[in-house]
Image (cartoon, rainbow, N blue to C red; front, side):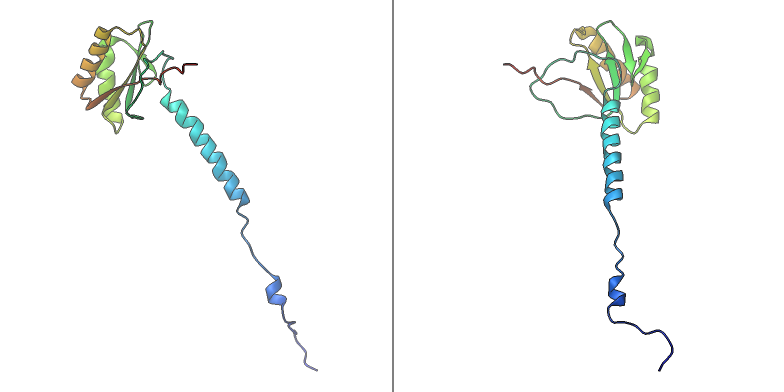
Length: 141
């Protein structure tokens, strides 16, 4: 009789190592939800304004957001500034960011003269493109 270990056929096949991907999938879904929530919060920086309505838009633009409210307040990326500080604030924002584009989020009651002043200051600060943010038209019933 031989002393030692006897292998029964099939013992090696009984040990199966599988990777459970369910926790990994859960982590990815949570990260996706966090990304979606923070990305919408970042695009809606600044005060709430009633944007002008337009049938068609060019899509989502990226850049420095300049908000002009109905009360006459002016904001650059959510920070309140005065009109005479706009050029310096845009120059600083262009130096810290990768895009030299400006998105004007003006209230629909914004006077054209104020919009032209903002666009002139943006061009003087070195803006390459200027976009005007709009809202989709209201649905008619």
